[in-house]
Length: 289
Image 1 (cartoon, rainbow, N blue to C red):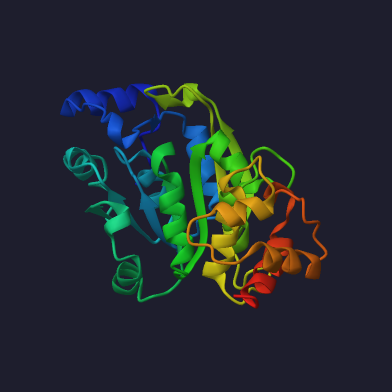
Image 2 (image 1 turned 90 degrees about the vertical axis):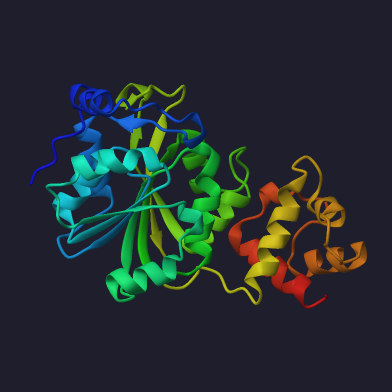
């Protein structure tokens, strides 16, 4: 079965049929551009033997395109009012299973084991701004058998994922994403491609998950604590950021000693350090705990 959603007329028809009311709390915006949908499937590199986890299927527009390309699609939707809609729009796609649940409350490791025998999967999602970071970090930090995550997010968030040191967008999210994956921009999506129309543009970005992180870290959890502390007060030096961060126990002389060991100036700001430098610094600080 070929996908038939992805147009303004088709989307409005489905919404009218079910009297669907958009839930502002879920940040719902549905795609109405078939060319963008095709670009997302291409960017996600979906093949006919792939198992795809889709987060936030909405009315099933993207789901139809994924189901046409993949072996199996499991779509997790938080809004229970969309379940009857999905049962209708996906009834001719037997390789789709819909789960009505909050993705942050799903046992993803268990789901992958049950539905795909624990073998690697691909993730595709259209994520609202308010929940993008928690969902991405949940997917990345659990070290699940995921080969790639292809997401459509607000342009500003996509920029934060892929930027490097010295840019205003660079921060804790940039470093976290780049530690676990290689971010690649696939498409820019203007507000006109959605209903209702959002106020800002979106970006499709693919995260290719590394088999091994690009840097060697003795304690991942501690490194991310160092990163969060360094960006907690962007205008302050990295030393002051660490000293003012709740729960960070090292004294100033130990921090300066670690910075000197790594060849990093004592007056530097966190936004100037690369992932490699943060890894080196966290290893040096960890030795002084």
